[in-house]
Length: 80
Image (cartoon, one colour):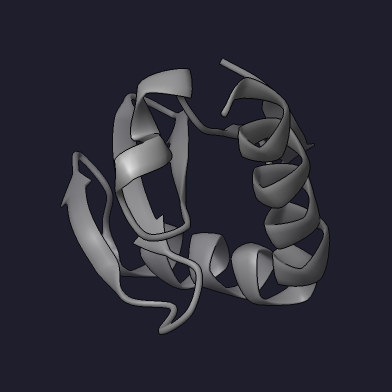
């Protein structure tokens, strides 16, 4: 599971088994977890996170979305 970014105490990563889903990023940290669709910046899920934490996560994903998409494409190109 490649880690793409660590920021604000969160780890932004994806799983090798995610290849059949649209591009997204998993986020874990501070006792919570989330899954964010990269195209729409919507949460697919968010557990154990308050509103401020969710906003911070979306801000980080938005700021680093380009690198996350590049990492997604590079990783899944190499495993297919």
